[in-house]
Length: 105
Length: 320
Image 1: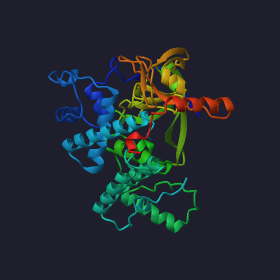
Image 2: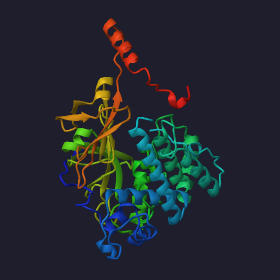
Image 3: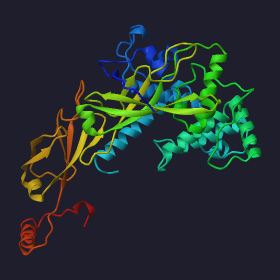
C-alpha cells in the first residue's frame, strides 16, 4: 500500500467557485455545453450578460450539470426536457425534505 | 474476482439488439432511480446496470466481452476466481473520448476495471490522444460534528497498474482529506490532480468528493438547516416555559416554549445551523410527551385536569 498525504483541498463555495471550463471538465463536456445549460435555465447565472469566462458556479450548479449530463447521455433527452425533469426532481426532493422535517416519513 | 454477467444484469438475451439493450437499460434506470425507487439496494443496482450498459452499449466492448465470455465458458474458470487472460482484448480497441460525460465508470466493479480500465488508457495512447485526465467523482460521508468543526479524514482510492506478466493489479493509496468547517450536504470538495491519469503526458484530472452527512442521533440535516425534536411536558406546552436545548456546537441555550404550544410547532434558532455565507438555522420541532399515570397522585392530577377542561374536545373536527 502506498500512503500519500494530500494538503490541498478546496470546498466549492461562493468564495471558491468553479469557472465554466472547470465545470465543463468535471462533467466531461465542453464550455459550449455549459453555455447551453445557462440558456435553458438549468444553470442560473447572476451576470449572464458577462462572457462565459467570467461566470462562476457553485456545488449546486455542479450537481445540476452532472444530473443533466447523465439524463442526456443515459436517456437521450434534450436539454429543455432535462430542465423540466430537474425542476420536478428538485421539487420532489424539497417535498420529501419537508415531510421529513415534520416527522412524516 | 467474479465474472459478471452483464446480460442478466439488464435482463436480456445475448442476441439482444442495440435498441433492446437501450430499452432494457432505460426501463431499469427508471426503476432504480434513487428519487423514485424504494428498493434497499437501489444504489448498487444502478451501478450494476450502468456498468452493464457501458459495456453492452458499446460495439467494441460488447464484442470483446462476448469473446471473453466464450473463452471463459470453454476454459471453465473456477467460479468466483476469474482473472482476465493476458491479451484477452487483442483485436479490440476501447477508448473514452474527452466528451463522453462524467467518468462514472470509475465507480464500476473490479471486474469492469480490470477488463476495460487499463484497456481504455492503452487505446487512448495508441491513438496519440492527448488530453488532461478526466475528473473523478466520489462521495465522502462525514459526521455532523466534522461538518461543523472541520476535520481531517482518510480515504482510500484504488489505482490500477499492469504487472510484469501483463496482469492488472490494484494498488491502494490513502489520501488525507481536509474537511473545511461549515461544509454542507451536496457540497463538493475538490482534490486537485487526484482524478484519472492524463493521456499523452497531459496532467491528471481532479477528484470531486460530494459531502454526505451521516445520520445523527439528535439532529437531522436539510441543506444548511438542522432539525431536532424537542420533547416538552403538557404543562410546559400549555403554560409556556424556558427549557434548555443542546446546540450542535456543544453548548446549551435556553429557549422559550410559547404558551399553548402544540406538537409539530416549529421554533427557529436563527443562524444556529451549518455555517456559510448565509448560515443555516436550527429548527426545534415541539413534541408533547405525556407523563404516565402510574401513581395515585398522577391519576388524580389527570382527573382534575379532565374536570377543569371538560369542554375541550380534541375530536371535534371528526364530528363526534
